Amino acid sequence: MKRIITATVRNRSGVLNRVTSLLQRRQFNIESISVGRTETEGMSKMTFVVDVEDFQKLEQVTKQLNKQIDVIKVSDITDKAIVARELALIKIVSNSQLRAEIQGIIEPFRATIIDVSKDSLSIQVTGKPDKVEALIELLRPYGIKELARTGLTAFVRGHQPNTQDSSFQSLLG
Image (tube, rainbow, N blue to C red; front, side):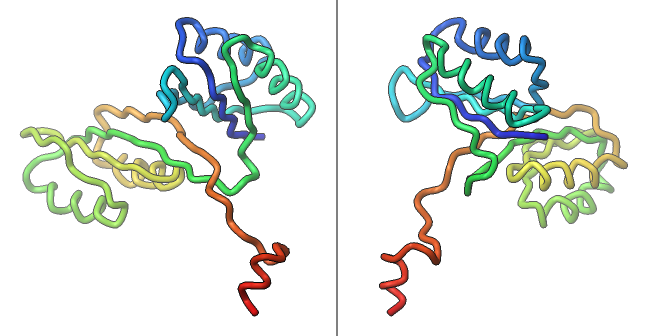
């Protein structure tokens, strides 16, 4: 089963290696990973998409990650309301006759052409991974020369009231 795990860590040398080594020792397949600085100086956020066998192994690795010296917080956010995005850069075979056709394909995905040469186009797309994958599949027949994907970046949405929330019910009258 695929799970999305975030880890807030101190931005220090070797942290990424220690975290990924721990996941590798536990035989977790890391399908994607993205890491970047956060709003707090000296802190980074890692977002992993991992494939795990069961919840027991997931709980085990979460506890072990939390014990790492530079790890501040680990969360499995898979089943929470999240905002998640991925970036892909796609270079495809193209010529001047195909450009209008390709533009028509990428427009509904809100993708943009970021580089043009006489024999290729480079396209940028951001969005949910299934959207990115769908565009890649549509462009595949044109011939993908190069593909680079960032991996998923995600965080939990802000508080969303639900129907059981009594304060929300009082707003409804």
